[in-house]
Image 1 (cartoon, rainbow, N blue to C red):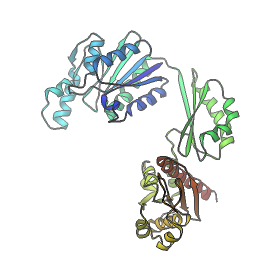
Image 2: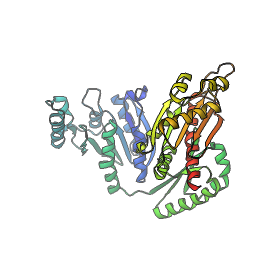
Image 3: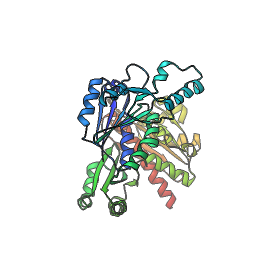
Image 4: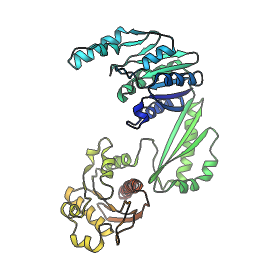
Length: 418
């Protein structure tokens, strides 16, 4: 099965909001064997929407549309559906009762005509009942293509995808299996990883495809297998991952799309009953943000100090002013003092610090752009490493944060084996 995802709204085209709906829908479809072949963002003009519907007719099995289902005049998706399917809007009693209950029962205000109009749907459509919002989804088929309209509000869209669309597609369509396996690597760039695994990659079966997904400081390797027998696909991927681990096991940190380095570090800290804190300068709180984005972070993350200025390093972390004067803020000595300072203040087992010049400029006599020092204080030792992550500024910050967590992960594992 093939699908196209269409987002409707000028606010997306002008960059006012970011389209996150398409990625979510594509991932949900992929899990049930539906291949997304195209993602489109189009304006909320009726003729443009109609032209898009016509172009996709019979070219894909499913067209999933998000947006334009609100109660205001600029939300025209339902009217456009009626024109495309030669239909008319009618009030759906079940949807109207739900909308009334939400407005009068939850929001405690009288229902308006605009609210009542949310219950209007094309008479020929199959209503996808939206229990978490007022805009119902719509399912309509024309020849060989099903058009599915969803609200643009992310949590409403997600509810309908999970509870209405996915179960319905699984029940009504025969689909091939698509099996993915993501291998997370940290510490080496895409070209170096590709060189190390070239022979392994060339020996992969034809039904397994490898994709490189690089980002600063890490490379994800995604294996995708398609076929009719799920067990054969899973076994083939598992066997090839075993061989891959023998080649680049030193840089592999996990095997799941959602298993980022911060999630892995957090799990290790919980397993070992250890805590961590951060003292950040050039990363500006990035490491702390990554750690706290993972559920359960309060079990191991004690806190952070973003000591961007010399004064903050001295006053909040206890860094000696003479040390800064002698070595400069971008130095191994200051990085180490920052880590020791935050460890002492927050009484943690591990403490990470970063100081560097992320750019875009450098002052005479100061560290060149891209120079970064990362310090880690563990229960047994203190480590400081120097890097040059080049430019631009965003790349330096991202690579520094990822490298710091990579160093922490390796030290936790090393200490656990001692």
